[in-house]
Image (cartoon, rainbow, N blue to C red; front, side, top):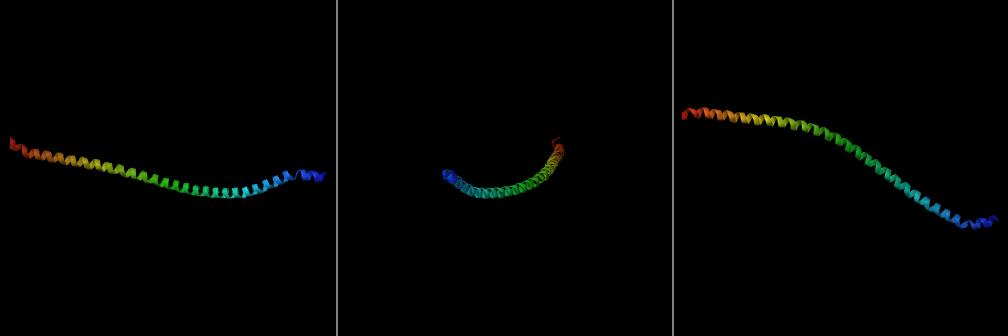
Length: 103
């Protein structure tokens, strides 16, 4: 009776053993993929950290450049005002020199 049961279950046992063999092969392949994915994740994390550091550095540079642009705009405004004052002064001077000639 035990022998008949063993012979009757031989096909399902063989199928189970075959399935186990293939699952073990897939398991090792999946372990390799997992290790590779973890490695890629670690590399991506490193690149992200570097990017965040650069972003902070660029943010600091943007603040500095914005301040410098503000200073340059103020200097340019003062220079333009000075040019117009010189032009006005020159025009008034020329007017005062020329006015007596037409009286």
